Amino acid sequence: MMIGGFLSSTLFPPFNAWLINEYGWENAWRILGALILVIFVPAVYFVMRNKPENSEVYRLEALLLY
Image (cartoon, rainbow, N blue to C red; front, side):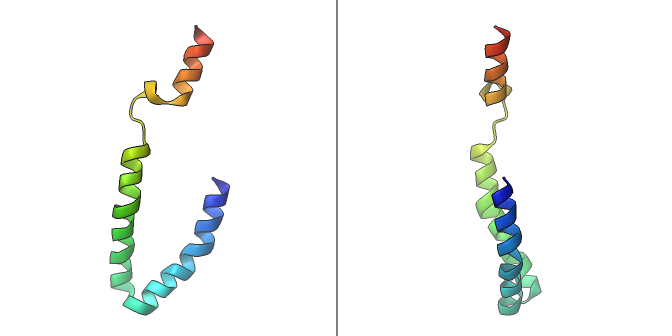
């Protein structure tokens, strides 16, 4: 988790500056929005667990309680 935060804070500002220089600030916002939709929405859909029964914490609690 800490490595991801470090990498994103290191890589995102130069990438953002490059997008603004190449495409302008309006299109840079559009590109960043599209990247969020294409990358993060499917990742959340496939990785997030909506049921507590599917989580590791629930399984550990069930083992400890029974």
